[in-house]
Amino acid sequence: MNLTSTEIFKLVWDRIRDSSLGKAIPTMYADHYPNNPSGEFVVMTSLTNVIGDSQVATVIVNIYVPDDTPTINREEQRFPNRNRLDELTRIAFESIGNYPFDKRWFFDVSDESIISEENVSYTFSSIKVQFKKY
Image (cartoon, rainbow, N blue to C red; front, side):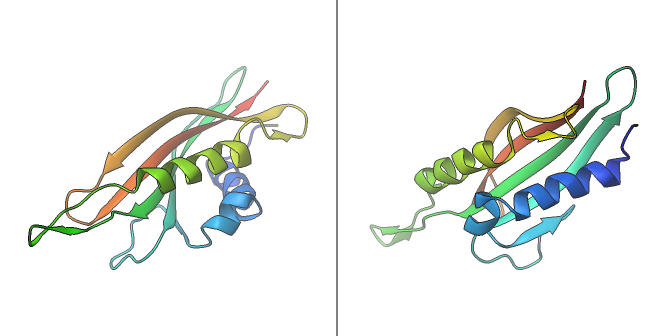
């Protein structure tokens, strides 16, 4: 039986909520970036749900971490907190990757990128999670 995009989104959402990633970052948003962010948070969104001989759905998990903003020579600087991003990304890989569901479905963490937000002092780790049915 094929799953809908909503069902797959909920499976990944619940998996994150119940994992060590959910304990490390309890604030999660579905499909949107918050207006006035504070602290670390996760934004999750669905991309595709291809149904065929083997169904493959793609979900993006973005882990946002505030940038470090030290003042150097009276000027505020902005640097990604790469240590924390790396720590949380590793937790995400362990929490989400290769999780079997119903013995025919697997989460596959396939890509990860570090992206810096221009207008806010946040950098995020963008993780592409594919949910595959074999």
